[in-house]
Length: 138
Image 1 (cartoon, rainbow, N blue to C red):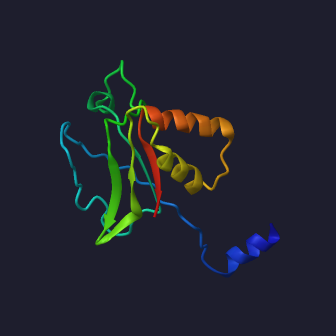
Image 2 (image 1 turned 135 degrees about the horizontal axis):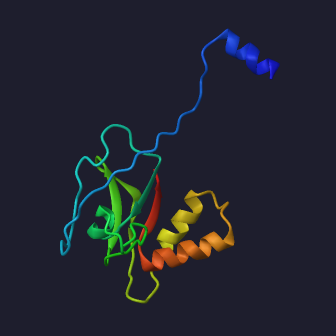
Image 3 (image 1 turned 90 degrees about the vertical axis):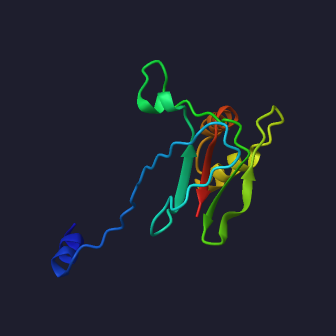
């Protein structure tokens, strides 16, 4: 403790800050392709977690929960920074029963550092099958 007090007496405190920002976008149903220009102004976030819910649940309809993520037949997902696509190979998922969503699942596991427990992994796997929950490490 004395070392901390001495360091504080010598100069300003330098503390790392991790800014958290939540953004929401309304997307129309039935659109074959949607581009959100200028979704991030300035510095890109280090991690992007995306979830899709119905508009009624988002607006606060009591019988519906905003944590019931759904995939809405999403076929691909990527982020463009100028001309650079992140990730370099976009996420392509099929929710037709063929279970072709493992890349989203593995990216979530590896981006979290692989330190989460097996119970959480099973829960995340079920959430990805029922809805979309991807993590992009930028």
